[in-house]
Amino acid sequence: MKNITLMAVLLLFAGNMQAQRLEIREVPEAVMIAFRKANPGVGNPQWRKEKGCYQAKCMVNKTPRTFTYTKSGTPVVKDAKAAMEALPGAIREYLDKNHRGAVVDKVLRIINPKGTVNYAVEINGTDLIFDANGKYLKTQKIL
Image (tube, rainbow, N blue to C red; front, side, top):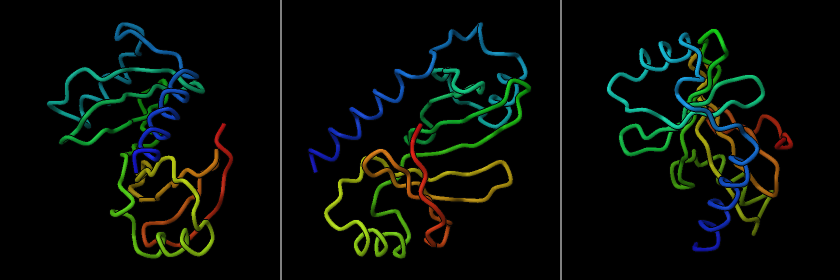
């Protein structure tokens, strides 16, 4: 378990180094307005710019969250780290059958702007994407 935690932390830092850290004054006003409207009472997040979008990382109800917006303030996606135990049983069964013994680097619960929930399970530099019921959708390489 310690190895999984250590690997997740190292990958988190490695991924964060690719993004450009921003000062709050560098975040477009439309993005700030959209973030504050969606998250009243949440303090100042850490801002990053990645692939032309603005990401806010913060804690919401003791859960690490990431909110991503376009330059105009349109929400792209929001996610939260999730525990393996929080995944639908179908995902855990899929992983046990198809990736037995693999080290899971990260688990995310992702909500797109339309409210659709997906899960991403990171293993060996790839994300396995599942729907809210645990149905496998696709595998994508992490950029």
